Length: 183
Image (cartoon, rainbow, N blue to C red; front, side, top):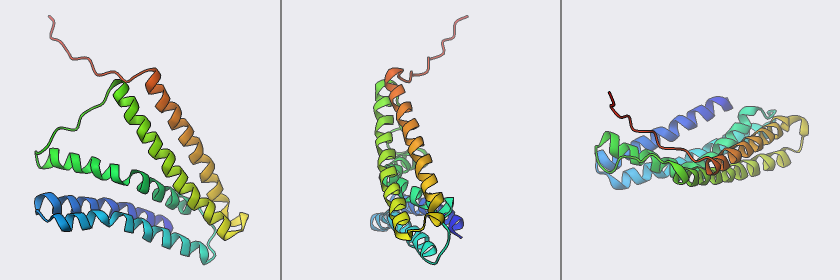
């Protein structure tokens, strides 16, 4: 049930964003578009309540329960930037308005990636707080083992992401070479 709820919430997140963008730009309904875009945090809240209720009823925590916390952390930390990303591409590629999304290279890319890592670390802190809170709330190590496992793996992923981020400062991403027609 929890896995299906996570998938449903992820799909709903993007459907709400798409409907918000369509309402905002194609239908010219600014208030409706804003309302739909503002629904994305409500989807996270629904997922949190369903997951908490399932555990409260006595379910043994699974990786799916932990992924719900990961999803919520990522959605909160990256939500605004994901909406901005979708908004920019919707305007340019579908409406043929605005500027083409730019590709980043060099230190600009490194700084942008590092900002993404900061969001990743923030999403970890949010998700970890939810997971630790759940572990304390359930107070039964045999029922929350999966939550602790996901915490450890996610921390490792955040660490690897930091190393990747630092590597872009050491060896900046280069712009592709333009092809010349030399015969």
